[in-house]
Length: 484
Ligand SMILES: NC(=O)c1ccc[n+]([C@@H]2O[C@H](COP(=O)([O-])OP(=O)(O)OC[C@H]3O[C@@H](n4cnc5c(N)ncnc54)[C@H](O)[C@@H]3O)[C@@H](O)[C@H]2O)c1
Image 1: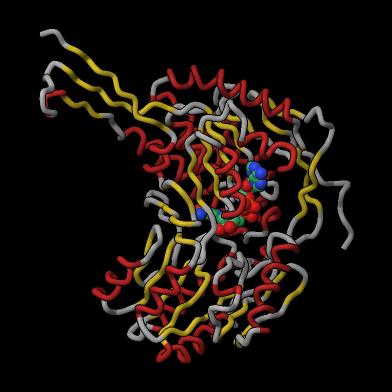
Image 2 (image 1 turned 90 degrees about the horizontal axis):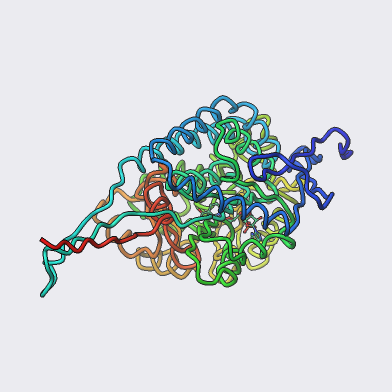
């Protein structure tokens, strides 16, 4: 296929309330994962421009923090409205840039507007507290502490490619409503979607400098941003290796990390297998498994394994595979390296004795949905996150064995337990070393106001609307020493 360089638009970055070309004179090509064409170019900005962005954010933040919560709310509501107005345009860009179906891309934009509105409403209902000194031995009633939450300053928001609008706004909205400014560094593949989201924010006429979008090469601005003295908090979502590296560089500033996962779907002997299979398939294969909370391994009781694998095979073979423009469930992966990585995991498993139940077919970066049975602990796919449509089935002979394998993972994002026995479900859930456990449902992030937590290699801190607001503010105590 020829590369369509000529008609691809060049996007500017957003600095101090204005759209600008970088002084570097350089741009980065953004190639569509399914059109295999360059769909646009974004600015490769310089370190000096990063400095300018952070400086303008600090200036704007001071005034912003002084505005009333109601004033800040009105800007955010307007932003949500503008996103809804632009939903068709933004969804088209998400589809082309990250290869997500148009329906899911539109859902992402609408969900983002809902997220922003809920965030505002949550903040409007969060209150400080006060306490008197006399509850501590020797303390006095005349000492009164007023405890309020105050913003941290300038928040660096780094989302991944897979939800380029939703996961970005999940950082921007709580930061802004609570009085912070934001430096938004989108994933390179996801930059145009991020820019479109900021176009909506620009239309809402936020104060200049409050939000800046910085696009550029990781090698030039990535570490520079993370180590910058002007950054007061980092909210990062992405791979575990990137997150750990970033945490080491960030030093002593507050960090929230949402990282990779290897969510197990535990299927007990007494589970409703049809229902479990339906949840596992949508959990594992929607958007080709490019979701942090995708089900990434099945731990099934050996007595029902053949039956479950039979149902899974039948249903997987019905999945639509192809272009996101046709609304396919399984679409080309974000790039060729990602497809090579998934293929490497499949090949390793086959070499070590796994059975291919269905799939193991590839067309460039499109990997057909692949189910591998008889997967054992010596295979990479038992432990590594494919971020693609390849699902391993590990047969177990007891709950204890399922729990042991589930917890042996370096990750701890979510887990699903499928069973008709609610007591067993709770008992397994209690032993799971994950942030959340889903009983009889697929692993997933939403609804967005639930706390969302990764433990072990899956993250640090918590998101979810209320928790995100807390993570982007700190408590400030003012003590009144009354004389009467
Ligand atoms: N836990 C969650 O909530 C969650 C949600 C979605 C995705 N993820 C994870 O994200 C991964 C896939 O996303 P990805 O491929 O975009 O991840 P990634 O780690 O490659 O990139 C994430 C972000 O970090 C940026 N980045 C890379 N190097 C950097 C550096 N040196 N300094 C600053 N920023 C840098 C990237 O540009 C991108 O914006 C998967 O592992 C998935 O599980 C986690």
